[in-house]
Structures are given as C-alpha cells and as structure tokens.
Length: 162
Image (tube, rainbow, N blue to C red; front, side, top):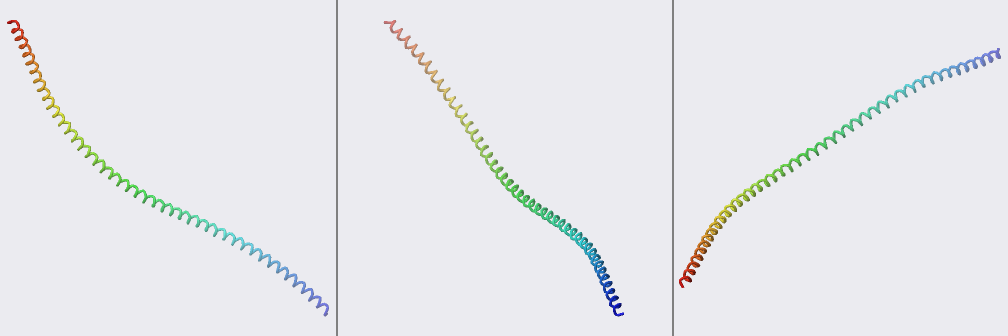
C-alpha cells in the first residue's frame, strides 16, 4: 500500500505538475494576450497623443507665425505711417518753397515790367529829343543852304557889277 500510495502520490505530483504547467502556460498565454492587447492600446493611445501633440505644435507654430506676421505687418504699417508723415512734411516744405519762388518770380516780373516801361519812356523821350535835334539840324541845313545861295548870288552880283 505504501508503494501504491507513493505511486499515487507520484502520479498526483505529476498530475499537479502537468496541471500547474498547463495552468501556468494558459496563464502566461492569457497574460501575453492581455499584455499584447494592452500594448496595442497603449501604442494606439500614445499614437493619438503624439498626433494631438503634433497638431497642437502645428497650431502653436501657426499662431506664432500669425503673431509674428501681425507684428511684422504692424511694424511695417508704423514705418509706412512715419514715411507718409515725412513725405507730407517734405511736400509742405516744397510747396512753401514753390510759393516763395512764385512770389519772387512775380516780383521780378513786375520789376522787369516797370523797368521796361521806364525804358520805353526814356526811349520815347530820346526819340523826341532826336526828332528835335534832327529838326534843328534840318533848319540849320536849310538856313546854310539859303545863306550859301545868297552868298553865291551876292558874289555873282558883286562880280557882275565889277
């Protein structure tokens, strides 16, 4: 009986070992399956998180680019406004200069016109003076001619008398 019992115990031990091995194998398979599924879930979750993170990064970079663009545009607008103000100042300064030049031109033309009128008056006065002198010379020439004719006639008369 003892041997039987030892044999039964050995069989029982073998049966327990087999069941333990089968249980352990089943448990390991089950654990492996669960682990595999969890790994897949974790990988999928990580993939979704990475994708969301990348999308968020893209949105942030887009917002930063927009912000940078807006800052650049604002800076350019300020520079354009300053340049426009400078152009307006220069334009008003040029208009003032043009106005001064026009006034000087008008004054110069009026002075030139007055001077020309004065010259016309002097010219007319000189022409009258020349006309008077010409008339005087003409009278003197006529008188000289008469006197010469008269002297020639007297000389002829005196010669004829002799």
